Length: 451
Image (cartoon, rainbow, N blue to C red; front, side):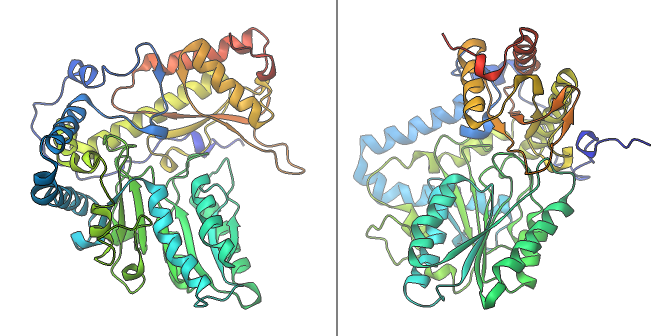
């Protein structure tokens, strides 16, 4: 008897509690106006890479910029610190932090990774950790995080163990099992795991990781510190840092929370370790605690950190506020993913409950996507010839395995589609039709030419 692929099943109901908001919700015409600065006719289904910022928030940002430019000294002494503190207070409440002093605003998740890994690297360099000790991370961790490990940890003598995650994935248990295996490897020969870096939502391929369960495993296994890289989290799923329980948790605010680039929050749970973290750009606030260090790293534009109250006003114009936006984005991206998979005769890369506002959809095998170069060529072709912006993922076949089968062969390529409030059905139909046209014309990735 055939069983339905769990990656194509319906998503369970996400929350029984719905916030009460005014019935005077933002109409479709105003949503279009808020994002009218987007390039016309482009099917922009890649919100996950750079995010999006509505016009009303961009206007608020401009007001902050002009206020600084009119009288910089008054702005610095009388306005900047209070404005950043107000933004941090909003984030503190959104993520259920214990105290605003646990919340710092930084440029992005890459900056946060440097902050966390810098103190780990110092401990290796100063002899607090043995050279044989290790850092644990997922093999699909963001490339900038891998480079930060190289810069701060391995050059100081530390080693790295990568958790090989399955993809496509069918259940959280598959991820937990592989994570436990890698912990055993990391602790072999008397080594200690000094830091575990866990993505909350992986970038490519995009999967929601059971982060709360993995943090619990880390605690049980005696891992010193846990850093959750949640670059895509806030604005796409509920974030409760107390429930998650990590030592450090970062999420970009410009990806799914409508801030202009670039700004992220870094939550540092109160501990001896958190008191030893510093911003990598040293200014005259050094030693006053990370939130204060981060609030002044020299003369620069701080407006992206100051507009968070304006972002909150924007999201509360939608039914259910940010929670309503998250729920609708999830429902729509699953719906669009299933539509594409059905049209192409392929599958989703994960069950719907393991995605948020991004989902992986298998591409037809007749495209013969067999390398990273093929993926790059297809993405450029879709952008330049069909005005479709979408990331392409090449799935490297495992030795001795054929991979996931579709109607016409083995799936080696996936698109990562996003859904944000500005997206429409036309965007996804444009992608669907472009891929179908390539297949119908008998072209493969290597045959695509960009004029």
